[in-house]
Length: 450
Picture (spheres, rainbow, N blue to C red):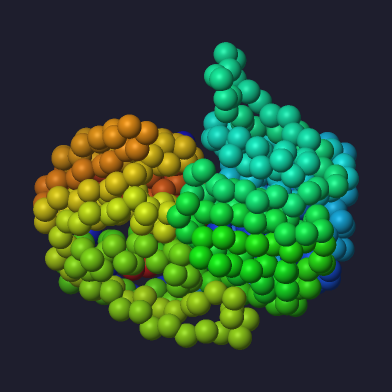
């Protein structure tokens, strides 16, 4: 436990480069590890989730070198992966620990479904409570043998959790309509679809982030996208691009974007941020709320698979808005910090269909609502059948309070931002959990304080 005290901040000014996008970085390790040859990955973030991906594939027999680079006193890494093709993994001598990285666990299941050996995957405490049947079910349909933990007493259609034992082998292609919009589920099926001959199709109810599709195209996979359907032509080895650069994480940028927008006399420039259209929900919604945000975009030679650019944010007068259910997948990770923005906005903000927040690292509806209400916010959670909406009455002056991180990185960082806007001192019970995705958060924050 590492408590952290926050006092009001006058303004935020400066320029910053963020660590590489966590979602893209994890995928870069997974996909390069089953390609044919050597890949150099630049601006790799040194957070717990991404380092878990590195550790997992080292246990699976892949040689991975890591070199630390200091940039503006902040640590980044250059990772070199030496891979041996789709079937170049080896059976580990002991169970593989994936930490609390949901991306690593779910996507590596897709890769292991095509391997001819058995592996036991063990997760950390938080990830062991997150549902896995959404991934195991389609992989079983493709031919993988999977056993997982099913709590007793089981329901009619029991949920499944880690630890998971998977025995891969000869797979068959399938056409699968995902019941819940999830980029991780889609990605696991597409990765498994690399192995069987024929076409594996994934149909999404709502388009989700497409980092996996973009990176697979970069590695020359036989993948095509048409509206909400993604088709993988299997049986083809992946060709590495030799070098790729991980653009800055827009989820991490979200905390500074909101803080600059709600504090007076503020202006920040966030450089080299990933501008993938499927991740621009936070920018789109903040602009709709009246945020003064400008984007200058360009592409670097080594990042042609993802758009990249700078984001400029100035102090703004925010107003409430309605976020529709079909907008949620494009900003699911940014909803906690968007709730903080809504508290400072004039009028009512309604977030529709946010039930997936219940099954993140913690129940983020509970964590964010309890904390913000404790600081004086007016928030109501309404259940509509299987869906849930959050209603925030903005314009309330937040007051410092003792709040909890719930061991969740995004809750902790969101409450730090709320505390910087609130009157009085806010004490967060544990800030160490930010290491999961953004260990440089406090250092970057201090560099922008004015």
